[in-house]
Length: 146
Image (cartoon, rainbow, N blue to C red; front, side, top):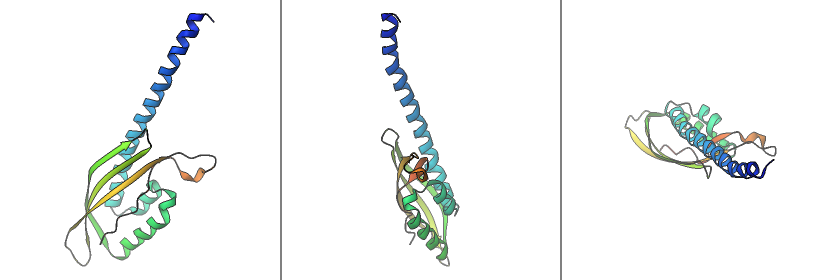
């Protein structure tokens, strides 16, 4: 290999690696947006069990499942939801979202509003922890609908 080709190759490799990292971060950011929207939609439509299965971090699942059961026992009905803000820091593998839920608890029909501050992390399965799951996982608890 000539010196020119070797030098050219050494110049191109960092650009290729940088381009791959930027593409990966863009995909993570899009995946983050979708995860927050999908999770919020599932909770809004009283499908918190599905939301837990798909999006809640495995370490948070027992507490989350208890909170879901409490919602069901108390007849909490979510009428609407809004994502007020979200920030996906794909390079740091973290995200935050602020979501409002409008809800009522039967037999009372007064509409209440609750603000949920969500904390998300990007997880990738490893040989050491294959159960961790891939993708964006919610690490904050389900809010207490009082």
